Image (tube, rainbow, N blue to C red):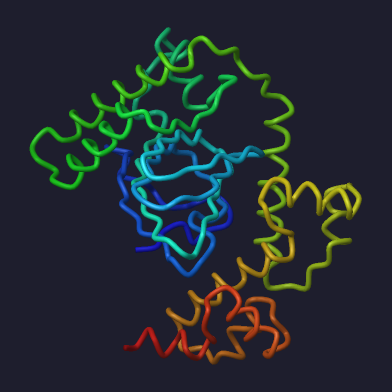
Length: 291
């Protein structure tokens, strides 16, 4: 099963409002280098790599991950992962809304422990290799979530709090990071991704985008590449292909109409771009859906 086909803010609700927590066991598509596509969400994400290796990007930092690696991805952090196409990449992702563990009021537990963890304000890596306590807890949570026995919600919440305690013990001796510069950069790249999403059916030039954000075209390209590991145009094309694949799956529109609705005015260019990202033509993709 492939998840994370999203390049901007993820709109999926991870669990109902009464239990805002969900667990996913994911086998990434081996033929694609992108193992987790660039996105963000309001939930905190706990990631356990089960097999394979990749480079996990969280904000502007890159971390190597492999089997047994545990990572905390902060709330609203832009993240993605790229790996080899020669090996299987599987992981468990536990996502929960920060309010799930917070108190109703702003008590000392929230201010001293939970909020710094959920935003990861510590001057140390949120990626922990070869730390057995964390993989064991994630596997335990995943098993409990799958079985959904009586009381599983309480058990999972207790386990998440236990995990937060262990994370705090790991991070407490490190200094807090200054957030101002990082927060601005994260906010800017999100605005850029949303801009590209909103313009996906139109002709977009780098100069127009640079003018919109009041920066030079060179600065735009360097910043975007640094934050997302791809160029604005490649990013836009992938978003367009993702949207077009949804139209091919969910509508009876002709392939040329789908191309036009997703910003491709040249059908040959659309076919080449679709093959680049999906490893098949639009026609082959639609035919495969009917098998």
